[in-house]
Structure formats: structure tokens, C-alpha cells
Image (tube, rainbow, N blue to C red; front, top):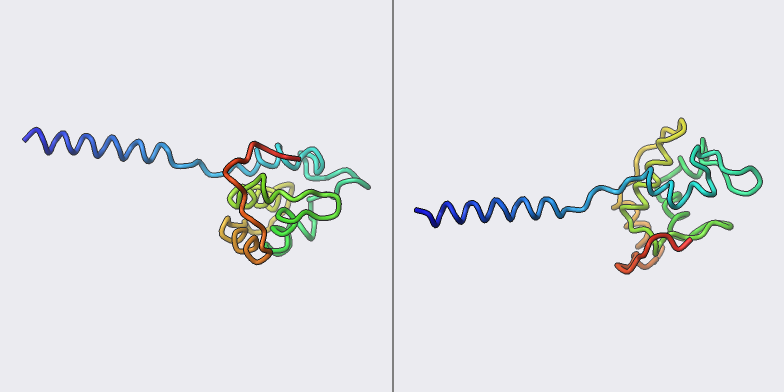
Length: 134
């Protein structure tokens, strides 16, 4: 009789351990603060003549594949984030920018970023990422 109870206790404790180890969803606001705000500013208004505003930006609120491409390949003086952010992180930061400062664009999923990464033949972010290279 004790064996089934002990087995149940072990299974329940292991289930709790697995659940506790599940990765937390990416925090788009924190990722933006770390990777984007220095140039685009915390308010999304950029620095005129140097870094473009993301507020009402046709790129930022435009098609998901186009804005994902900017983060995956860079644009103008902006570096790419393809090795320093994984697809879930890129989706989170883009979703944050697309829904902040009055922007009303739909969210972007990690799967959409992954598809764009594959279409552009950009290698996935590595496991050895140590924060932002920028």
C-alpha cells in the first residue's frame, strides 16, 4: 500500500520541478530597454537625424515579416540582433514596440520570426549568447 502512495508523491514532486523549470515568457519591455532604448529612446521617439522614431513608424507597425527582417539583418546603421536575441525575444521586443506609445499593430509570434529567419537563411541564435553584443 505504501508503494503506490510513495510513487504518487514522487510523480507529483517531479511534475512540480518540471513546471518550475519552464522558461518564462520573454519580457518585451525589458528587452527593449536593454537592446533598443539607447537609440530609439524609452519613449520610442528616437533621436531626430540619428535614430528613427518607432512611434507611428511604418516599419515598426508594418508587416510582421518586414519588421522581423530589420532585427534579423539590421538596416542602415542599425546592427542585426540575429545572434544576440532568439526568435521568442525578437517577437517579444517587436510586439512591445508595435503596441506601445500609441502604436496599435498586432503582436508578432516567435514562429513568425523563425519562418522569416529561415526564409532569409539567417542562422539561429546560439546557446552561447552572453547578453547584447551591441
